[in-house]
Image 1 (cartoon, one colour):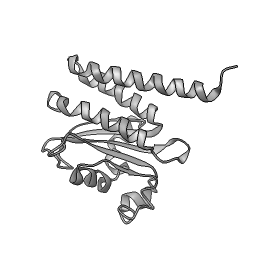
Image 2 (cartoon, one colour):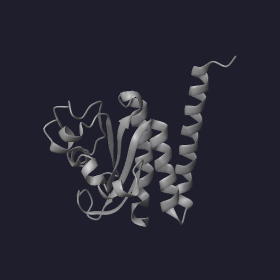
Image 3 (cartoon, helix red, strand yellow):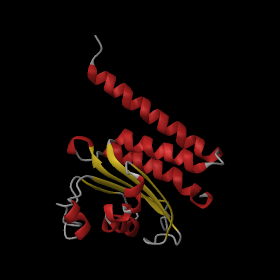
Length: 173
């Protein structure tokens, strides 16, 4: 009989392998959007997020100067409202500090709980990591975690590897 926990571990390892293979393939692609959509979907699935959002900025590190974005886990109508769905306060902090923001419940976190977008939407688990450094050129934002669990340090590592591979490609989009 197969141990269910080993089956789950094997599935996680397979998804992580698939993600890294796709990330390695990014540099050789001429059609980046379809590959990034697939990679974003895979990272959302692998980390157990409810939704994922990538945004690159026209002026480096400037929220609101978006030149390109992509969402996963949102309908086409919801994509129009994605900036209202995510918290600009969390994104702004990730960009200002250059560090990944991880919180198990943004609406309880002293850094974000006074923000209207966080409070009204009762935003729970968030992992938001900058893309690029000095200054960042964008963000990867993941929200909602399976079973209302927080994102783990392992999740953060995977998100940061994903974001680091996107930074050199930002000018190609």
